[in-house]
Amino acid sequence: MFSNKGVVDLSFDPGESAVGNVLHTRVLDNGKILVSGFFDIFQNYKRDGLAILEPDGKLSATHNNFGGFKNGFVLSSAEVTARNSIVLVGAFNSFDLRSVSGIVKLNY
Image (cartoon, rainbow, N blue to C red):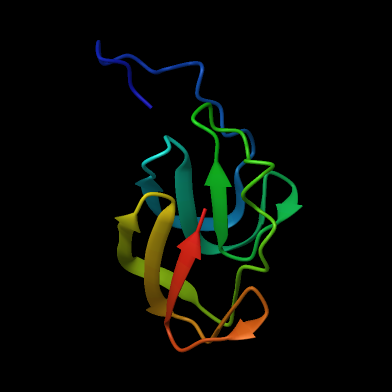
């Protein structure tokens, strides 16, 4: 993250981040950061392609208790629909251990 002066914001520290590739990020209306991509582990926790970070880059302890994506990933489409709700679209067939067909609405 960059401060308004264009220098690196040292208060943002995502640590070791993902074991795999982060493909997309989205700042949510509550200031938290949704990250998605091809990863199973994020900051040493099982996250299966989706994690929510606090504004300082640390993994959110209150928003990461879902099963994540199996057999797929989120595409660039991630739209905030209402306060504390986002629609994710991608090439996946399961989210949070439930069968879905490429689209899911996530309350956070």
